[in-house]
Length: 363
Image (cartoon, rainbow, N blue to C red):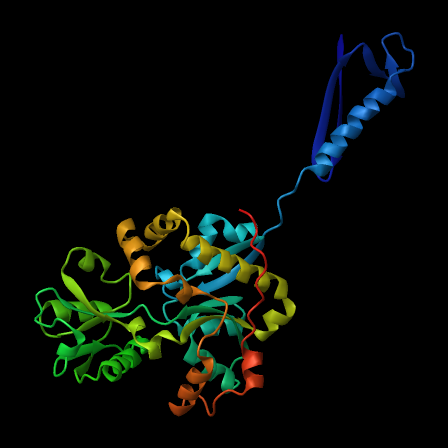
């Protein structure tokens, strides 16, 4: 018995068929061992045709589009979807590989999107977007919400005599200009509970914690995951949560942006990014692997990650599907001189262009 083989290429792939028979390849055609023409060529043809069909029917992996995305606050739960979705393979399923960067300042995100060094910006404050749009400083568009409401909380040292919010009148309470929401939230807290503490400007959550633990400040503030270990250890007590205040809870505070030019020229990839983002949020609240992945990413214990999600970040707070309270926010922005006048309906429709949801793809 002699062996013979055929090798050919189909759709860039090499297909090789090896057989055993008394037939050999000689001269200009197929002949058997006696030199006579092969009489079973059609059977061989069927084999080749079957191989061709098998290769043709084999699904090819979709081509991956690289997408540059710049994200605010590396390690924050509310902006973790791009990182977690990438690790879980959700964006890959939609044909996207994310090139993620984390700038030092939120203002750098808007600059990156405008300059084209990033296609999508995640976690930009709504007031900054309104200002840039209304002053025509930047042709940016909102393609999704990041955070509606706030996960900020106020706390006291475990040994503090302060037991409830009503006990803070006359006491010192920290806020930070580095986090605009901290500054506004403390005044909303005072209005909501009709208390009159003494706001004190402190630079950041870490400095605030140190001041509270040393007894120099009565009430501190933080954004999860900061303070998670101290809560687990019983060193601090939560006094109030920002999301308990309707004025804070009912407004979108940060968004995802892209340039108007990107929406015009690369709408397909923006649509796929948004759909993958939606599916990632669903996964973050339905799969135990999500908190494990997040804990690894943020560098915190898994139990702290789970408590943080369950206690501070309700799923609807991270929904990208609508910008909540934009009319109110627009009026407040005009009142505070961030913009000249509240947005009209036409301007709102131009600014907010969130891609429609589609049926989720199976994983």
